[in-house]
Length: 586
Image 1: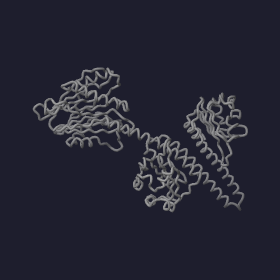
Image 2: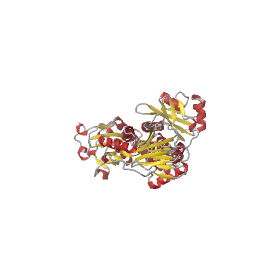
Image 3: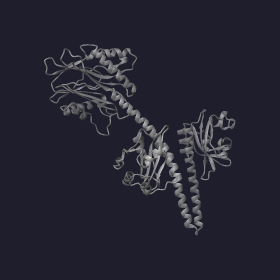
């Protein structure tokens, strides 16, 4: 009973909730939360403080009051002062014959308008609580029957059969109440369709547990099955998409917007297509119940509940499964919303990344890996573009940048786009295109403009060396992890020269730049910290490990080198965005 009170407090967000049962001279409180002393300790209220006793048992109807102080029936009631009652909602608790036993009550210390959804949740919990009370009554009746059996030998067999039936009914009632409670708890914090599908696997328990629960989501004129992410149902994956006009029980539930029940194979053969019969035969189903999943604005999909043996679905069980499907529909609607947000974030992040220029004869390739947290959208980026040629017919120098804006949200992504554009402009506005000069101009702009920009980056220029055949790399590093250079002999060195990160609070800073000659066949690797930072790992050791990977795989084409360098174990998904850019000079 305390569990029901906690659920009321959590779902309706009220400070006080209790289960109240009527006795002749008092109200007993077998379940409560938030009630002050002495009532909490005694688990009882005198009749003078029983708000619902005068109204709920007499009428059998809910008592819902936004502000008891303004209600003519309750304004003088002593419970208002002693219990802090202002807003009040109570649903009747009944036995199997409809007799009102008490009420399930929610109390708020401030006025409030009780929403339809809140009252529906309170009514559902009251129904589950009533089922628990009926179970206790039935259990008492069962014990009484056992006593009669001990004294009545002649009716022993029939009484034993009755007791078994009562026990089964009581267990079924308990299973139904447990299902609703589990659905309300287990599905409240789901974070995606896969998570919803995973929790459905263990949601249904008890004697009537189905052998399979399928989730199908609507998309225009199709139903898409959400496969179990942890258990490989090869047969389940045979039919992942169904047109709405297909002759399947699930599509009929979608088309007709109602529950569809198929009691046995004969009914399946008579009413559905051979493809449906073949699929259900291969899956080993005998009985199927398909329930539409209604969202707040539209039909979201279908829940398919299947049993391997013929199963009779009674009125009570069907009502319970329908109520549970409501909780599932809420979780699916929330999951679809979250998945859509993640998809939009990913598309935005990818759209903001630069298309690499054609850099013949320099080979260049880039890789972006999103963080494991799907909703994180970050400020990691890369950029590459040609400078204006020094003379007609000669290719211009190549500018390359890798940077990381502080933060993992839409603001960081927005600032990243601004910083990338500002750095391009600063570079092109300051011939002869010094990386350090461009960063000084960026610092100056960030210190003046009303934008909260901070982070790290490496800005570099690659020129063909005078007289050839080698190349010259000039770079300026604003607090970024050191680029790695692999020479044709397989040696890897870190370009450790760097200045401080860029930050509005630091103001304009005198940036320096370094220069290195690149032998023909050299590979340059630039990356963000997501590639090397791991919880519990030393960053210097991670850079050394990355250098070893570059030494081993850096002689391959840049795109293949990036795949090998950035690969990681399946259980080690990145906690931050990763950007890697590799280029090789001929």
